[in-house]
Length: 374
Image (cartoon, rainbow, N blue to C red; front, side, top):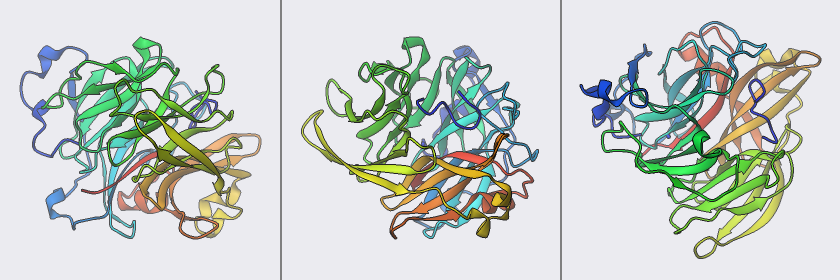
């Protein structure tokens, strides 16, 4: 993996119901150990207005450094913590809170639709990754696997999808126990490996993931989780496409394009079982020419790249926009909101606002996970 962006060819149980806050966790061993990390205060979700969105993301709002996805990276991989924000219906932050505080990078969060839990993976080394679930109300967390990455929690919190490093980097599905303390039996979802960055639609049935371009079966895959057995179907096998998201309605897939500077889309029409029809919609978001007008931090960027999209609703995406200085690589990345309603799509900065809500000095926020609150 490369810093900030994984190699290109490269979400909660109801608050108060998480039994993993009680005694007995010690008997679970390494996969089942818990820890409590400091968290910025968050008001109870039942005090929030109805509607809006939950947003989870990795960020360094503390040191002012640039966190990444490698603990030994030149940009100082350590520093990424997991944050959760509650957004109103206009995508403005109501609350922002830090859920973790760890010297190791914590990245690729996935938030449940009621905002109560966030799954993510943490990196102990360039090869060791652990799958973690954190309670947004208390910051109590539990390690569910010490050999997994790219988790995706279903909107209802009933199960997790993730890349199982112990099974040849296959995409697997596993139910969560009622208390959220353990994973049940793992079911492989096809043989396309190494699977990365799985994302599930709001219906909890349809999902997409990608296989890096270095693999023989590279490409973007759609999978029907209700089919038995599930057999992933290719959306595109164009090299360099990755980091995909599927719309809440399940009718559209959006991914990083091959250039690394825009987003491409495909219309999806599910058939029966494992069948789909696909049509390309081309590039829907292009690299903006002047982000400095909306965020002065981008004034010194040689270029920018847009990736890690996550659908909030059918017309809005949370994305990462990275600042790249010519000759020195990526300097920082911030979360933006992409509005697909106009053509061309527009980008609205969120990262600076999110950081200011926690009085953060750092710039970097990335790998967002967005869900309509319910």
